[in-house]
Image 1 (cartoon, rainbow, N blue to C red):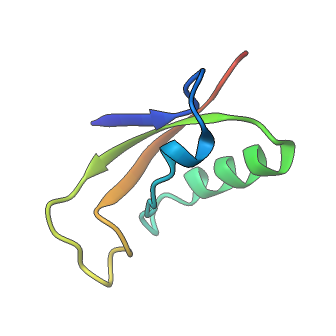
Image 2: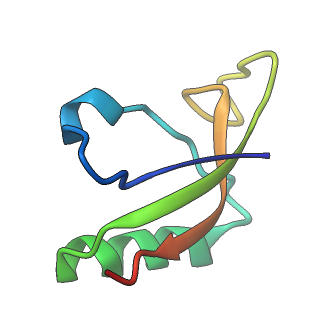
Length: 71
C-alpha cells in the first residue's frame, strides 16, 4: 500500500494523480466529498493494480483509506 497526500512545501500541481474508488467503498467517496466541501487537505492511502479493467475503474490506483490532515 502506498500513500499520497498534502506534503508541506510542494505545489499541489506537482502532486496531482488520478484515482479510482471501488463501488463497494462508498464510504471513501463520502469522506472525500466531505473533505472537499470543507476545504480540508487529505492523505490518500491506495493500492496499485498492475492492470486496468474498465469495469473496475479508470485508473490502476484505488483509494483504500482517506486520512484528513491535522495541521
